[in-house]
Image 1 (cartoon, rainbow, N blue to C red):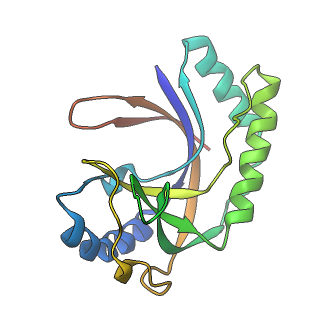
Image 2 (tube, rainbow, N blue to C red; image 1 turned 30 degrees about the vertical axis):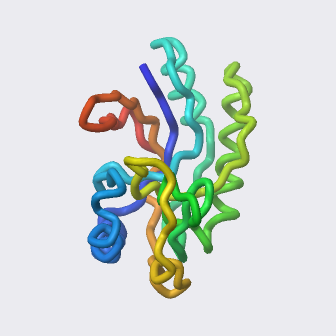
Length: 180
């Protein structure tokens, strides 16, 4: 089973983001496959293919981490892309306020998972909420969506969740295994 650990935000924030995205979706609808708002999350760590025993270790490790996310908010302040806005393959919301909290959470998670035999990620952690993926290769994002005032949404963190990802032809299905 494919597993990953992510931060979930509240549904009110998802609804606000979704309303803002209507403009982008209208402009870029045929170029991107959009992530359904019910599946939005901020990935802390992708684990990949795992056994039942590894899943159980992950659950145990998550129970040992002090997340202290109650009344914790993050701020999404701009649209960004991987690798960049000139050649967008993945469109996402960037985190401004709360970025340090998420980076510390990621580091604490990495340290705890190492105790259970999971390898530390060698990728630079960039907190983000994926909105969509390009269907036909890189695309330049219109300047009107780069305005720093276009997106300014605070989102409340609800939980840290261990997800199972099932890949399907119509897109991935994310199944919550445990939320803390």
